[in-house]
Amino acid sequence: MNNPLVSVIVPVYNEEDNILPLLKRLIPAVKQFDYEVIFVDDGSHDKTVQTIKKQVNSNKNVKLLSFYRNFGHQMALTAGYEVARGDAVISMDSDLQDPPEIIPKMVEKWKDGSKVVYAKRSKREVDGFFKKITAQFFYRFINFLSDTSVPQDVGDFRLLDREVVDFLNKLPEQSRFLRGLVSWGSYPSSYVYFEREKRFSGETHYGIFKMINFAMDGITSFSIKPLRIATYLGVTAGITGFLGMIYELIMKLISPESFVIGWTGLFTAVMFLGGIQLITIGIIGEYVGKIYTEIQKRPRFLVKEKVNL
Image (cartoon, rainbow, N blue to C red; front, side):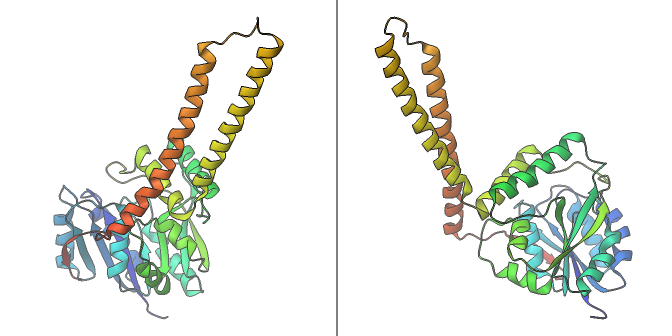
């Protein structure tokens, strides 16, 4: 395509100070194409929507879709994919840690035949030690337990071909882990590398507990391995208990005078078995929760307003 329509989806949540700096760098990077920039406001409480509307009024290529309340980052991306009209659709965050300047390189990779172009972090020097360690653990952990491999050191900064976007829009899942869904499609993919920048303004909305929940969503959406692990833990606990019982009987027969039953062993056994039971119940609960969400068939999000769409 000589002049493709490129859609850029930007989910935002309380990012009023990042909107103008982002557009200042983003528009020069995409103005060589036919383009649209779609901001999806995920229920912001600050002046994010007002700031975007000022830009929408002055540039018809800038568009806004806003929610009544916060539905989460993945739902904001889902909404963006549903309204994007582009031949190539790019998703990125608004905090400028993902540099817009590499978008032309991503488009070139797409023109060469890639259906998915990932922006991969070659360096994360701006991230703290804890952030880097937890990110490495996140990808290794999710790929170990999941049946669908997620590329390491990539986030939601990626380009998708129109075919891939249509595929995602047709999927019926209520709970959506888009990184996994894109990988599950196994479309031809390639990478563009960049150095991660510092967040321009504000603080990240993804703390440690949100990352854990995000990882759990990814694992339970693409694998039943946790259920099998729970089964293995139960079998291991049962065998251990049976062997311990045999050992106690033998010791009672061989040396009854030296065999003393203490509270420490009993306490340890109860804690061990109780811990395994709670872990197993928790894993089953995660899957039951997924089923509950799916059968409710509620809307994924509620759109409050559309501007220029």
